[in-house]
Length: 242
Image 1 (cartoon, rainbow, N blue to C red):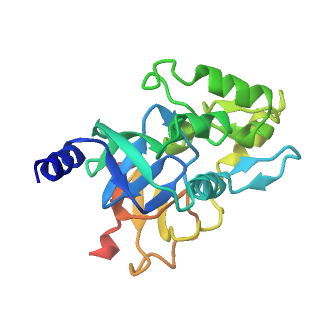
Image 2 (tube, rainbow, N blue to C red):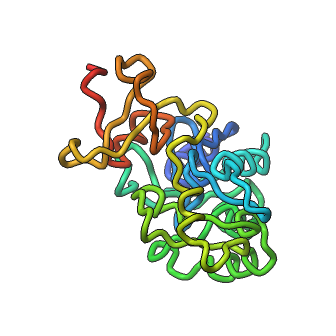
């Protein structure tokens, strides 16, 4: 009986272990109701597009999510909780790995080219993995992409473009392809958002499918899967949604 109680207490205070893992984007997991953003890395946003080695646009954010989900499969995942996410109040920072594997999912994503190191939070931990992915042109590095943080800020003019497919002298044209206002809705992410100067104190306004303004909105800067994601990115709900 004492051994059973000790095991239960250890499970309560130790890293979380869940039989089912839901991957919501390239660097975010949900385990038994707890959402973890993978510590020290940055994957493409779910609505982000990139250029492949031929210069064609592709849905790299959706692909990064799907590759992580496929890699995990039905295997159990363990996450070490590193505390609350400073940007998303309902999310935790985690270092996660598949049960019995030494390599973390954080490092795997960077090494396979589906995420980049996110300084200063990475603290140099993933520099070697990123250099290897870049040199071997894995994942995103085959083509050209904007840093996810620049897409989140819609930093069109100052975005850092990286990848083996980026061509010097074509930065402006490339940015026009990467920062699109006509991108298709990512699967399961129907919330439209548009940058708006009139949204004082916010980046812009988001519109839910049931809002009166939803169908009228023709130009969309961002797509979100939940209101929490839209709010955390600095967008407020459209007045027509109330």
